Length: 389
Image (cartoon, rainbow, N blue to C red; front, side):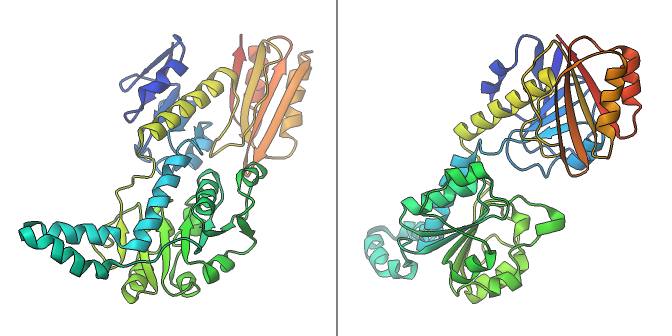
């Protein structure tokens, strides 16, 4: 029986993904895999049995992925599973950023006790909430992954002049973009020309903490609207508060409220609603479960944040899955051990990313325990798994 631990409440639609060979629950011991959402794992004691963790969502800041990579634990996320939910919230944020809707609702609530005067007060007071239409305005989308591409396409449908920037734009993401989206090579063009700017990049502390800062805000048009439904840390709160106070930034709409932002002038805070739809939670749960099962049963890796994607169809009943450092000659050393047993390699896949690599080997007969020990002893090998049918 393979134990799967859930560290948060996860949509039950994922349960049919696991066969009768799995025991899934919040109280299982020594799990081979873990599914979670926002549970913070930095101080969590991981079982030696755990080989994989799946985050039912895109962000993995709550998981020490680099630490787990060194332990041979593969961390997955579910990019794109919540893309439509976040896109819809960004569309709402465009309206909130333009039309002062949030302020107007608060004001209407304040005149509830005015009785018959309400209608007259509404007509007199509504002018303070006038805001522009988004039709024909320039929308800058920074990051064109699953969510950013959806947002860019939605902007086109809404009649906006859309500009997108992503230095790592994949072929698959590019194919999903509307031809009307203007893909630019320099983010400075978005800063300088766009009326609305929305951020859709992953948060990497060493690279882009405070990406929207005082210097970049100074490059933007006066009265720009900034939307952040990606990660709160991507925006320097001190800089944004100064800019919204001076009205350099007409509106900052964020899905990541902190104390200093709540109630601040020209700031609209939402309570991290991006993926809070039943559809998104279901999609993320199913995707996370499928990725876990595929890795546990076949060693195939798709959408890992700490190891490269590496997969191939099963061609024999005997498979070795080896997680190792990306160092010279290690692949030759591994295959040499297999060959020394007179075992033919039927198929092999090797992928690397940064300092880590994955090798999957299908062999025509079982590899001996002694050979497995020899492979495990090779310098740079982190974990080896034997998957025999």
